[in-house]
Image (cartoon, rainbow over all chains, first blue to last red):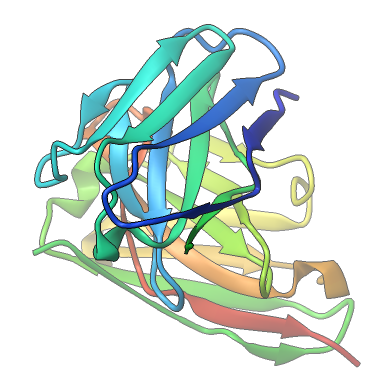
Length: 107
Length: 122
């Protein structure tokens, strides 16, 4: 089965910082990768799909890049609403795997 | 607006069964694949099962294949998850979720319910 590994597990940052989260696949998944944001007690929210496509209504400070086995989620200027846990998800071959999550905390 | 409301969770003993339901609204339910995703307390997300828009194709995680069955009733706009042989490690919040594209099951999830909690304990 394809494994997804995110780094770091926890990230401390300040308002206005540029933040980058990495997700690596154990084998190539082309661009079949999504990113989700989850806040405590809430369901996940889709941010990015197809590695770099921004979901409707998501602020443009969020962006995704990568293909094959290495992917990144970037938040260009961290806002108070962005402190949350972020998950990558590969979706291909009629199966799904999530990364273990990256918690973005206030520094 | 898209909405999914899960029900059927509760406390159950190991080895017993439970059926979860998900009532969907705000979109053409019969046109979209659907999924169940779970999250153990304090842990990450784990996809459990998916089902094509017409119910003809089922997809399962290895950890539940043979124990769980996903199904749907398009006339009732409802998704189900029949869980047999429950184990303590199945304890989790179970989310119902909608596939991104109509007809074609992409396995990409765009909307989630709020979840129903299943606790497996003696």
